[in-house]
Length: 144
Image (cartoon, rainbow, N blue to C red; front, side):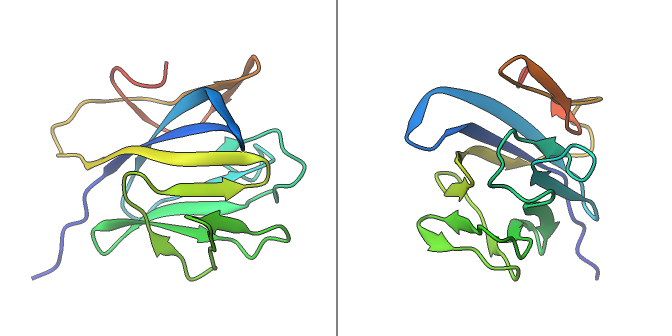
């Protein structure tokens, strides 16, 4: 019998490395079979961060084998997961994990599987320094 993959809600605290007092909250709904990209250019990534140390597409997030897998996309400056280099083969993440990409730190604050009946609004709006970026989908009550 085939395994049914479920949507996951991933909530990240995101801020500048060493300065998380002003951390923003980013809620991403990861759909089975879809890949979310984080990088420096909106044209190539679902989440664009103003950071010259990032590649256009720097990090990917996807559902695989019932978990949430993150991968470095063979970038020049790399990605760290909990202090170790993240490779293009990827690692599964869980609550409390920390990723460093460029000058940003992303902390996995919350993660859960969503049921088919869970209500999901149409998009995420991430705000940093007055810049609004459409990311994907958002669960009611987060990220606005």
